[in-house]
Length: 315
Ligand code: Q46
Ligand code: ZN
Ligand code: ZN
Image 1 (spheres, rainbow, N blue to C red):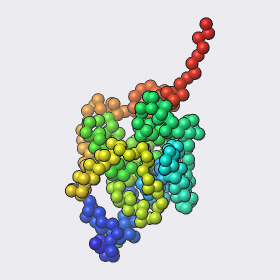
Image 2 (cartoon, helix red, strand yellow; image 1 turned 120 degrees about the horizontal axis):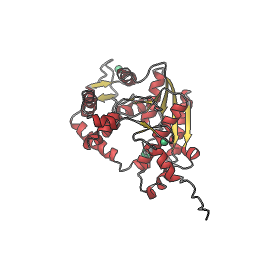
Image 3 (spheres, rainbow, N blue to C red; image 1 turned 180 degrees about the vertical axis):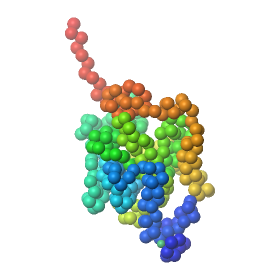
Image 4 (cartoon, helix red, strand yellow; image 1 turned 90 degrees about the vertical axis):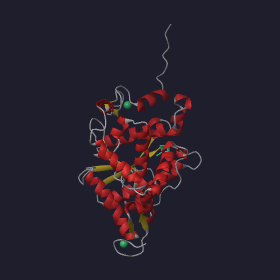
């Protein structure tokens, strides 16, 4: 297989695009694809301050790498969740995020949730619903809250995450199965900000997971290979496996699924009721955006974890 641009031996063959490229041209092609999404969906400009959520994994470190190569004004945020039973996932992923930052002379901000909120993610999960909450739903909630609060308080214009096409297609597949209109309306390359919510963007949303893997490997980015121990057996991994089987038989199916959804969404696919349900409110506790009026899920979670002291009745 030869590189379509220079005719040298190809390093990456993308059946989904009918395109093969050598290492040099592949490492140019990926940032160009990200830049195309940034422009097409109006994600951000060179004048804006961007915070990249960095987990130590291949996607977020590659995103950080790509944005600095494209000369955007970017800093990283690592959230230490304290998932350290067994493989010391948090310690190792933080070490790799810090290593990447220092090697590229980039600024990494770190929020340790144990220092900030008095408990690690496993402790928060055990302390809720008598330990029956799923770690990933608690984790998603905590990360969304911390990322938005940090970005808002430190004056960032935009929060960028490393979600790739496989992540987006899996979420869309799950939402489609139950036709969850309000969630589908909030899914996309950009979630507009305002009223306490910092704009959230996904510059890698059109790039396949294996394309990002190839980018990280060819760029020599050292990332955490181990998956988070809580991801084992998750629904999103199951959906990804199903979609991979589809993609194997029909290269490009995932991209078509996602892009067709984005097109269909523009044409009145959803009811007025779903549009109202998708609107955000401000939490009466922390002032951050929430899907329903009253306290947000994060504040309710923290309330359950640290209930107010029981008062003496005084009789
Ligand atoms: S870190 Fe958190 Fe993931 Fe681990 S607990 Fe689940 S959501 S799997 S991206
Ligand atoms: Zn080439
Ligand atoms: Zn709140």
